[in-house]
Structures are given as C-alpha cells and as structure tokens.
Image (cartoon, rainbow, N blue to C red; front, side, top):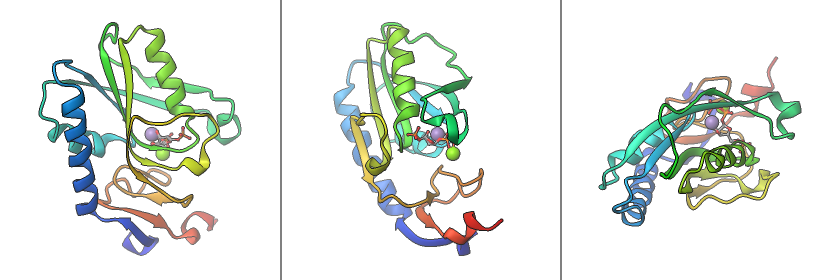
Length: 180
Ligand code: PRP
Ligand code: MN
Ligand code: MG
C-alpha cells in the first residue's frame, strides 16, 4: 500500500497540528451554543474523531452518509441521502464536518437540506480543499489545507474504498488508477 503513494503532502503530525488549530477556533466560536456536529460519511470519519477530541466545549454529534449518482450525473448536483441524521436540526447551530471539498456539490446539497430543515445556522469545516475543481461557488468557514489538483488519498479519503486508514495524506501514483 505504501508503494502506491507517490508523495506525502502532509504527514500525521502536520495534520494533527492543523486539527488542533481548527478545534481551538471552533471551541471559541461555538462557546455556549451546544453545536450539532455532523460527520459526512465515510470520508470525514477520521477527521471528525480527531477534531471533536480537541474541541473543549459541550457539543452533540450525528452522522450522515450521502452519495452522488456517478460521474456523469454528478454535475447535475444530484446527491442521495444513504443514511440520514437521527436527530432534528431545527433551531440548532449545525457544524458540518467534511474531509474534502472538490466540486462543492455534496456540500451545497447538504447545506440546502439542513437550511430547509430550519437549522439556526449552518457552518462548514473541511480539512482539505481543492478549489481548482469547484463547479459551484462555495467556501468552507474553516479550512485546514488547500491542495493541488492531484488524486489524493489517506486520512479518510479513498480510492475505490482503499487507503482511508493512512494516517497521512498523499498523492496516489497514477498507475494505480489507470491500470485496467
Ligand atoms: C468525497 C469526499 C466529499 C466529496 C467531495 O466523498 O469525502 O464528501 O467527495 O466531492 P464534491 O465536492 O465534488 O462533492 P465520496 O462521495 O467519495 O464518498 P466517501 O466520503 O464515502 O468516500
Ligand atoms: Mn465524502
Ligand atoms: Mg470517496
């Protein structure tokens, strides 16, 4: 598996340092608001766990799984809810936790859903951002690292469901995803 990685972009310690910074800012900004922190499965599961461990204020957590309808229809922004939240967001300060923003379609759909369900506020934290790939105008409120337009895996991010368990983020060797 290590042999499939061309280059490490951020190692485990650099990521942990950034996660602690983001958690400090979130702790300060959400003080007294008991935010509902929503993990977007599957990619955000590791970031979610590391983040909330470093947030020092009371909060609640929930999980949502979404999927887009394959590459060809992804540009239409059609996203399907695979697993919905267990609790109501009505009147809640919601913090969406994402691993990466690429086209922005997943998040723009989720933000829309949560606003229509009358969340009091919807805020987004993403560990990684690939602004070069954006098709809808959207920026996270908190961003960890801005990445080049390369195929990256690790720290929750997959290629064909693999590599999520890597504690760092790296560029996947092109031969891994071009081989038939
Ligand atoms: C990935 C990633 C984000 C989304 C970003 O999830 O985890 O959720 O794509 O892409 P976008 O900005 O173009 O919508 P994916 O759909 O691969 O599911 P996964 O989290 O289960 O890997
Ligand atoms: Mn995802
Ligand atoms: Mg994926």
